[in-house]
Structures are given as structure tokens and as C-alpha cells.
Image (cartoon, rainbow, N blue to C red):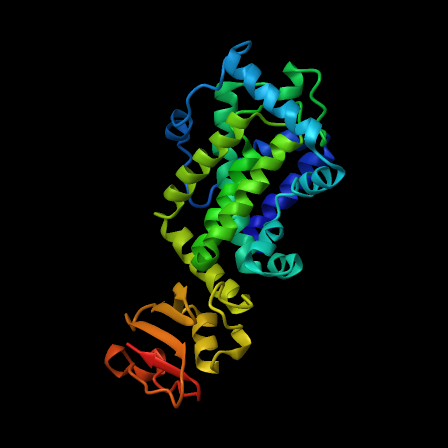
Length: 319
């Protein structure tokens, strides 16, 4: 844990100990990658449906329908997704939650992103001041508690979920589809539990897209993302869709992906296409074949960096 985060957490513990509670902690401004000007963020959102409007009624009816249809298993999954922990996305990466939660560079980046998003979402909530569904429709039976005191629009939980999906897709683009689907599922759980309107969740996705776009321009974010990417890629069990377990790849290729030198681009019919990172700048195709690897990396950079020594029976490389 970095010293700055330790100081923040100690301060939070002191706040809680004095009885001022969790809302005082949520109001603390800890920024890492954004400038704190929340006005453009707040301006993104149209007003939510007005109180008593047909649009609001339709959203409440949607939540009631979800409530009637939800099973005990649905409730259990939705309650588990109340936790804003990066490990909740491990399945979309083919990892165990404990493995992802144990990656210090990934966890630190996710926590810093969450810190920044918190301020922006809080200001938007304060601007629109929309009540939770249960405060409007008494037939709503939330499957999680302790949310009535917080405002509803946009959904902070959905914002976090989509942010994590976009962030992890930056780190492992070949798993982007699964990560985005997991983010949508994570956000929808707030509707399953009856604590957010559909438009709250939609606004959360819109807000997450804006936030990640701003962060991607920040040099500190870019550096932290690179550290997290290297750590995550070293642990990924396989490139999704390649048709080959990472355990069957030549050692040099596995090392390349673990270090981040290679990034997956596309896979088809047993061939694996990858785009190398700098300084190589090469596009290569890996495919099972007969014979030795005939190296073609010499023209793309230093042999030690561009993996010129990759040779294994059954694989070929073509620049």
C-alpha cells in the first residue's frame, strides 16, 4: 500500500471512530488522475424523469417486474455484487477472485480510479437529488439495505462497474467483450435489487465513459495502467479464443505476453495474430505448422527485445 493511501485510510478510520460516519468519508476528495472540475461531468446528464411522470412510472413498473421475477439465486448474486472489489471481475478474465485481488498494481489503480470517480458522481447526485425507488414506490422491496440516505441519479455503483470493465479491457483487450458484459451485469444488479432506476444505471454507463476518457489523457494514469497491465498479463491463463492454452505456447511467446511486449489482436481458425509493442513495431502471425521457427524479427529491433531466438517445433512466425 502506498503511503498516500495509508494516510487516507487512517484518516477515514478516525472519521468513523468519531461517529461522523460513512457519509463523511465519502465526501473526502482524493484525486489522482482528474482535476476536480466536475461541472462538465454534471452537464453530461439530462434530468432524470420527473416525479409523477409517465416515464418515472414506467421505470418503477420495470423494477417491480424484476422484483417479481427474481429468484433466490438472483438475489444472492446481486448481493455479492454490492462489493466494489476488482475481484468481482475475475471470472471475465479467466482468473480466480483471490488472484486478481492479490495484484497490488491492479488493485491500486482500481482504487485510485474509484477515488476520482467518487467526487464526480457525488456532485452529480447532489445536482439532481433524485430519490431512491423505494422512497417513491412502497411496493419496492430492496434486496440490500443502507442506501436510502444516498441519492439515486446517476448510479455510483454502475459507474464503478462500467469503469472497471473499461479499465480492465484496457489491460486485456482480447477479453474486452467478456469484461463489458460483466460490467453490464454488475450494473443491472442495482435494478434487480430495486435500489436504482434504469435511467440511473444508463447514466452510470455514460458517466463511466466520460471519466475513463479523461483519465486516459493523464500521464500518471498511463504509467499506472502500464504497471497494472504487465502484472495482469503475466497471470492471464490463456489468450481468449486462441485455441491454445498458454501452457502450450513456446516459452519465448509466453514471456512476451507476460511482459506486455505482445498484445492480442485477433484469433481465427487456429492462427493467432498479435501486434507487438515498441520498439519492435511488427505484426506477426503464429500458427501450428511443421518444422522449426524461421525467425523474421531481425529487421524490427534488437534481437534480445524482439525475441529473435524463438524456435520451437510446430510453430512458425511470419512478420
